[in-house]
Figure 1 (cartoon, rainbow, N blue to C red):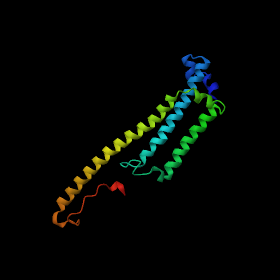
Figure 2 (spheres, rainbow, N blue to C red):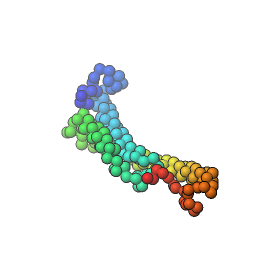
Figure 3 (tube, rainbow, N blue to C red):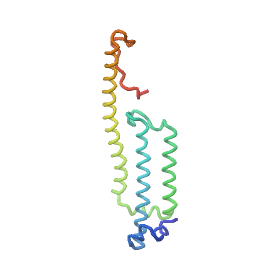
Figure 4 (cartoon, helix red, strand yellow):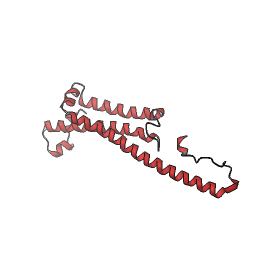
Length: 162
């Protein structure tokens, strides 16, 4: 259903708000573009879910072909839906009405999500390594002389790196 008709459907959010047709159309456009940006943000942020403790500079999410296909499919379907609902002729005019800082906020949200993810993974990695070293020391202490591990062998940092 095109945006203009959906805004006039009985029981729609626009009708319940009592908005004028022009305001209804602007609200519908804003909702579609916000939905598109949210899908882009989720698709981009889902790349960081590929590894528990390594960030994107240490582990490439593009090695996971299933994730690449799923993210491309989700974003592609959303883009097609927005393109069909807005109409190809009106998209440049609608995007031209958005102030430059609107696009900056969208890109900034993606950058902020990446930075927060990097900080969280860094903290998680340090906590994991601290726990892993403690477990290693406890294991070698309990085993004592009968340890199969050579003296001077360094504790592994993480089994997640493999």
